[in-house]
Length: 264
Ligand code: SLL
Image (cartoon, rainbow, N blue to C red; front, side, top):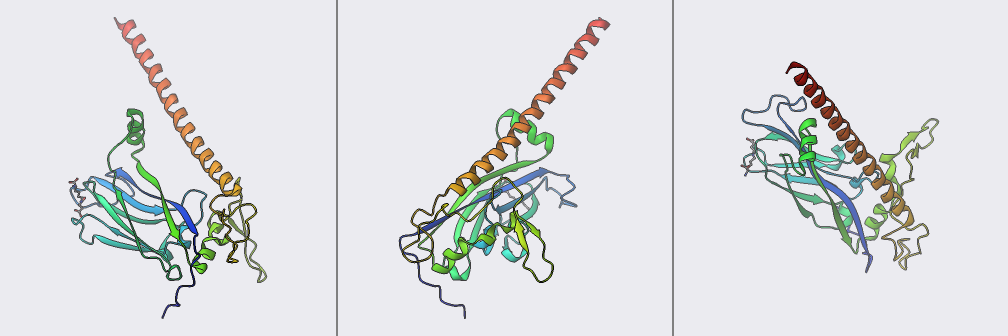
């Protein structure tokens, strides 16, 4: 029999951010071998951590994905024990878009009921003409959003799990595990990630160490800034790539123009 959930932290709330989304390609594609006839798209739908964020398997035990009824086995479940890099995902092929129903399940000690989310699959190019051209050129469509989950008055045990430092180990490099020593996890990025606690957490009344102001911290702020900075770099790269292509097109137009002139 599972242990009864421990007492709850009155008046406290812990929120976690994560990503729900899908990626998609036009078939044929090397990632999707031998699709059934009539299937024109390959896609993945997923629940995953924020880049540089805490491991979501800390609080997410399993995800049930309910697909369109045209799929033979429409209900698919992914357990946290089987995920890689904290990403719960389903891969499929098909011909049309539909809403995927997701049910998120939490650890027993949390005493939390499952929560429901939905993600509408995006399998066609979206956004500005430039964005659509980039998606077509790469044969790669991504549609995702940041989701929030709030645990109101979490149990003491669950709050401890949510504040543990281990949930950042997936971002770190395992170092030196010889001679019966515990492995050490070293973060090699710019920002040392940590549980979302203030730089100096005021001691909570209940002795949990989760102070009243625990929702925001200077460390978390730096982490968010680092995430935004890396997104900015990716965007900047995409813009430069597009500018390069535009110049190339301009050059070729001019060449063609000269060739036509010299013929006429
Ligand atoms: C549409 N209203 O027509 C949607 C329905 C159905 C998606 C999309 C079938 C997969 C299979 C599949 O792609 N279903 O044959 O197993 O756009």
